[in-house]
Amino acid sequence: MAEELPDPISRELRDAFSNAIGHYGDWRREESEAEVSLNMQAVAISAVCELVNKFEDPMPDDLWHRLAMVTPGGETYQMISHTGAPRDFSLA
Image 1 (tube, rainbow, N blue to C red):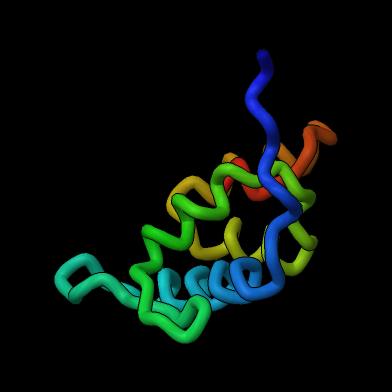
Image 2 (cartoon, helix red, strand yellow):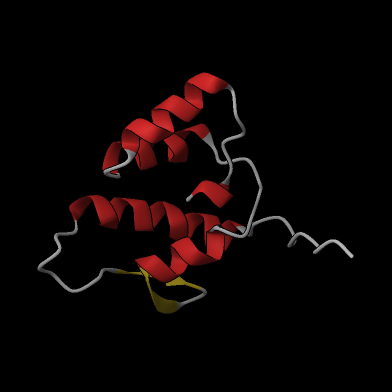
C-alpha cells in the first residue's frame, strides 16, 4: 500500500520555516543553532526543515527565492526553477 501523504502544511509550520530561512541566513557555524517558535515552543531550525521536508505542497515563490539566496546550494534551486520541476517543501 502506498504511503499516505500528510495533510497540507499548516500556516504555523510554514511561518516557522520562513523564520528558519531568515535565521539560517544570519547563522554562523561557530554559533549555536538558531531556534524559531513553532506552536509557542522553541524549535531548532534544522528540526523545522526536517518537518517541512515531508510535505509536497507547493512552496510560495517568496520562500523559494529566499531559500535559494541563503543556502550554499542556491544554484541548485535556481536550476530547478529553470527546469519547470515542482518547487515544493520536500526540497527543503
